[in-house]
Image (cartoon, rainbow, N blue to C red; front, side, top):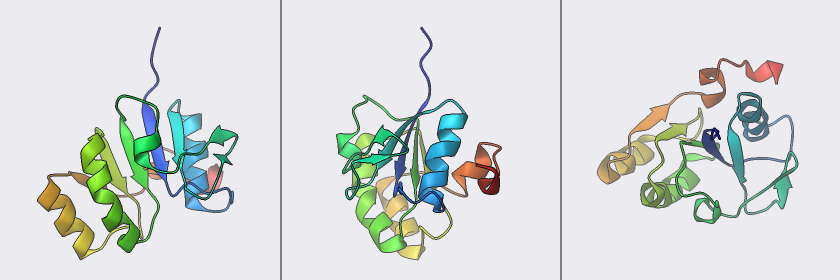
Amino acid sequence: MTTRPTCAVVGASRDRSKFGNISVRAHLQQGYEVFPVNPHADEVEGLPAFGALADVPVESLDRVTVYLPPHLTLELLDEIHEIAPTEVWLNPGSVDEDVRARAEQLGIKIIEACSIVDLGVSPDAV
């Protein structure tokens, strides 16, 4: 049995025009097991949505990709540190100097780039 890589999309949206939704679809298309994280949604793209990263029902995550404004990303960093995913993607608009400083303080290696583009997918094509 092969296991698919896992990805939590924090800031997953029910609005198909938002990057937090496009990311869910792009990661699914590329074979990821996707866990949308949105405390205001029951489901995103037919997948159950989780209120927090800690609620995601897997032992470990290969990727956490964040679509939140910097002040919410900052609040999320302790939770990211706690679950220790393999990769942490902070997409455009989710990071500022305070986020960078706190991530460094916690020893979280962040990737500041579009995780959708990293998949080899154009956000416009999803």
